[in-house]
Length: 69
Image (cartoon, rainbow, N blue to C red; front, side):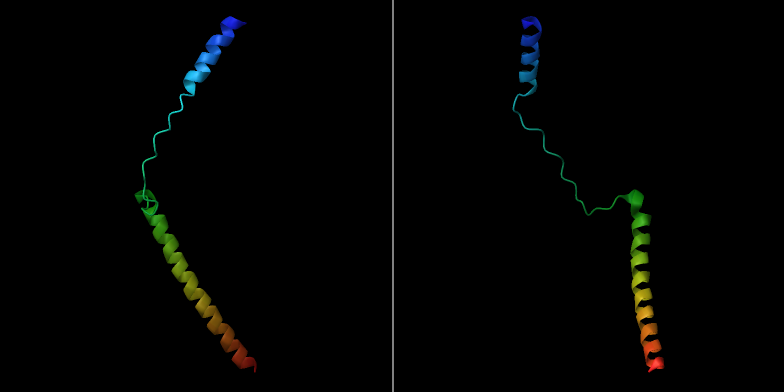
């Protein structure tokens, strides 16, 4: 039992040497990945079209409200 326990404890203590892990390299989170550039542009266009669609729907609602009064 001691022949197994002592080496296991030594390995455990050697693995926990207390050193700090190396810091992660800093990556700019705002820099888009070139592989996804077309998808990012498509999402931007879709957001712009959504705004135009909401504006047109609001204008149509106002016209309907004016016509019913």
